[in-house]
Length: 126
Image (cartoon, rainbow, N blue to C red; front, side, top):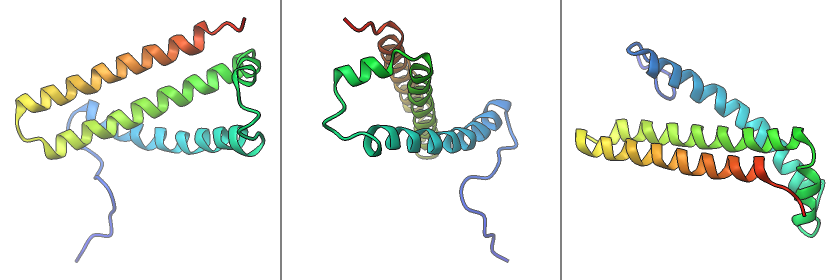
């Protein structure tokens, strides 16, 4: 009898893998809603001609939009890099290269997470 299951099975091992499995699904659902709202606000309700420095400055006067954009950034980064971690688990056989891959993921998360957070938190319109 063949299984109709699609995707990875729920992990049985470590707690980290189980939490990662749940996070992947929850963050994916969250990203669908965040991305749809982002596209609607930035590309449907406004045109490309409307979106400039003044538009972003006015939008980021609201703590809601700053938090929204920060949440979109963090969810996209962690979801995507968690997917890259799973790809490394699946396809990289050498323990040494896995460490290199995991290190690259962690460095990317730190660099882009800090840069994006600083841009959103410290933005002050002139």
